Every structure is written in structure tokens, then in C-alpha cells.
Length: 382
Length: 198
Image (tube, rainbow over all chains, first blue to last red; front, side, top):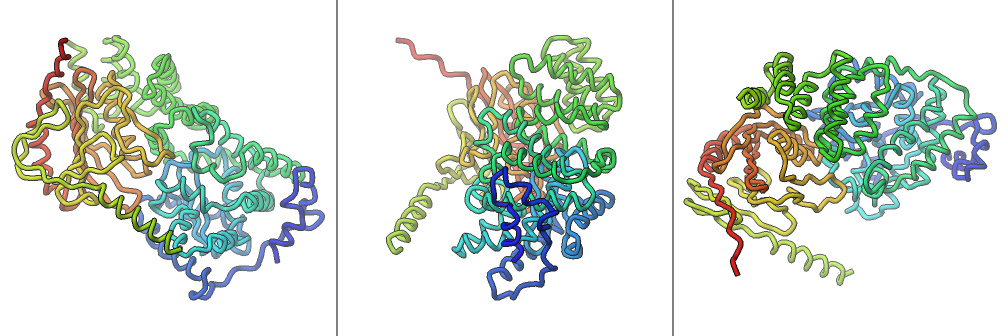
């Protein structure tokens, strides 16, 4: 059985035993393509449930039907899946949380919060490879059987990020997530798959390192983050992945291609990131993202907006600096000028506030809040 | 096992009895200490533990439409139920400007991952004070249902007063919008009660 072979190869061992996992000794091999299980079996029942979820997702307004981005991500998943490619169906989902999942029937979801956060194609491939790893090792069936109770199946579905289960994610993560061993297995398989697909495996550790920056920025750290409730601690994950990547050949990262492909969605995803109201996490992420090659003005605007909404000590000054920097770069979102106007208005700089609001209305005359902004201008003119 | 089932049943029945429904009759109604509204036609008032500081009214039943009425929310108070501690909490600050009030409610309404789109934000009076009126469209994460909403908010003496009505875009929202607008027009914020003299 592949899982046994995998374990023999050293996956469950300590960090010191990691080289035993190298492909030179006993390469992990993907299983043959899966056949649809008997519908009377527990596995068949799970597939049927996921089929129904997939039908819902296909029609959902949260499904990003981008004719450029979807095939591009599908192609990445396909190259990771190898022979299983025909069974993998990728759905890009508009949800501002870091998540991807793959159901046993081949439905893969990639959420916008994840796509916003990864810097390049290789980092995306690391996460997708991890999900493909769960799929190839059939971890979900293992978890289903260990859950035992059929009444648990409904909540178990949350493992795949099915539509509508965000609110219950804490519960899901706590009780029905993959085991830590499953996560470690999937991490290692993911690194192998991304490497075989020609990506730089060193990027896998960076994904977790970057997330760790955000988690540690939260006032109460990982404790309140449902996505980390049952995952191996990110420090461990990052170190393990870094070590594993060191034994593999390098590859491409494709930063430019990824950032260009996602550029049409960037502002919407950033708006949704700001709305999450997780100010500290967002600032940590946006500070990192503002060093990317593309979209610097967008990231600075978003960080300025987060500072403005947090409105803590010194935050309005930080917001002002970010908005000014975004405007100086050019190509900034129109909302940069609304943000400037609101900060100036709060700090009683009427002339600057008026000028910024006027600029905003010039750039976005049809904005939903145009009547409110016009009212601000009138008040400032008195 | 039987004991366990009995315990669960008792707990469920106990939970059921804690949800209360009350008819709100036409005419003048005072919400909290300082918000007075005059309603034309009855509403249903739903109350249950942990539902947050807003009064929840509905015409069609809670899964369908919801009128949230905030009266006298104090600085630092969380504006929604706090049952799911994994989700971000949104609190009122007494120095919030109109745009910040809108952002706060936007954050609250999208806590579970629903989409939210402002369609209009304009200055307005509410309860006799300067405030903001905004309209929005949402799609719920749970069931992909397109909703429409209208809201009014103001800050008086450092306290929040607001009214948010959200209902399915097709049918229900247009059916009840005029009633909600009428309630908003009728709203009157009463002066802060004087401190007792000893």
C-alpha cells in the first residue's frame, strides 16, 4: 500500500531522518487513478455528498469564472496530479480566507484569500500539491472512518471547505481536520510533486513562514485562528519543508506570470481583505506584499485603509504616509484619495481634505459613496 | 446511551424555550432607553440569549428578513452576537465618523464570508441627528442567497443608534422597504436621562 511505502520511506520520522525520504532511496509513487467507489460504501457516500456540493459550487456566485485564471490554475493542478489530472477539477472561490481543499471526488477549491497571499506560481503549487497529496493518500476516507459516527459526516464535510461552512470552521478544524500525521504526509508529497512539476521546492517553506508572520501578528497569536487549530505548528512545518527542499533540485517560481494573471482581481481581493477587519494580520501581509514587483500602489492603499480603520495611536499618520506613497507611485486606486480626504478631514486640514475628495470624485464619479463625499466637500467649504 | 440521549433532549428543549417571540403592535414603541419609533403595522420581535445588543424584528421569520435595531450602544460594545469566537468581532467606538460606521456594519455583515457591495451611501438624518443612510447588496455564504439591505445610523452623545434591514432581493425586500423607511423617518432619539440627584 502506498501509505505504508510512504511511511517506510521515513515520512513519519523526526527531522533527522528526513533524508531517508529522498527520491534516491525509495521514491514515493502516486497510486493509479481511482475508480468511483460503490455508492453503498462509506467512501461512495462521501463521493456522492461531494458531488452534490460540487454541483452547488459550480452554480455559486462565489465561483470565480475567470476564463484566464481558472485554466491557468487548473493547468498547475494538473501538472501536480500527473496521471490523476483528468480527475482534478479546480474551482476558484471568492472567499477572503487562506484555504484550499480537495475532496475525494476530485473537486479542488482554491480560495481568493490564498491566491492573494501567495507570491508566485511555485507557492501556489506547494499548497495545491499538499492538497493533491491528501487526495492521493485518501486521507479523507481515513478521517471519515476514524470519525465513525455517521452523524459526524455533515460536519466532516467542512474538511473540504464546502460552501457555507466558514462559520463552523473552528469546530471543523478542531474535530474533523486531517490528523497531524496526515498533514505532514501531505506536506512532503506536495513538495515532491511541485519539484517534479519543475517548481522550486524552497517556496513551500516560505508559504508557511509568511503565514506565520500573520499569525504571530494577531493579538492572541494562533490560538484564535481556526485554520491552525489542528495543523502542525507553522514553525515546525516551515523548518521541515525547508530541510526537505534542500535535498531537491531547484526550479522555477514564476513570480511575474502569477502576479500578472491575478492582477485583474487584485483590488477586489484587497477590498475584501480590508473588510475582514483583522487589522494586525492584514498589516503583516500587506507590508510583505508591498515589496512585490507588481501592484505596489494597490497594496499601499490597502494598508493605509487598514491603518485608517484601526484608528489606533499613530495609525492616521501611518495611513496618510501609505496613501501619499500610493498616490506618488501613480496608478493608485481612486479610494486612495477618499482615504486621504478622510484622514485630512479627521485632522482638520480642510483644504487638503477638499482637494482629495474632489480628486476621488474625478476618478470615481459613480462611486456608491459619492453623495456622502459631496456632502463632506460642502461641509468643508463652509 | 439512553441517559446521554435524555441529556441531549433536555438540553435541546431547554434551548428551544429560550427563544422568545413577541408581537410588536402598531404605534409608538420605545427601544432601549432612548430610541422611540412609530410603526405602522405589527412586527415580530425575536429574542434569545447571545443574540447581541440589537433588537431583532422580522416580518417573514428570521431566516428570511431581519430588522436590527440598535439603541444606545456604548463605546467599546460589540455590535453582534459573540457565539463564534473564531470570527473577528466588531465594536462601536464613540468617535466613529459616518464612513467608519458603514465599515463597521459591513465588517459585521461579512463575518461569515458573505459578499457585500455598497450601492449607495448618503448623508441622512436619523432620530433627529445627522447620520448616514446606506444601501447594500449581499450574497450569503451559507446558501448563496442574494440579499438587499438598507441602513440608517447616527451617534448621539457618544452612543450608537442604528437600524439595518436585510431581506432577499427578490420579493421580500421590496415588499417591506417602505415600512422600514417609515420606521426610520419616525425615529426619535430621546435626551440622555439626567443623573439622579441625591
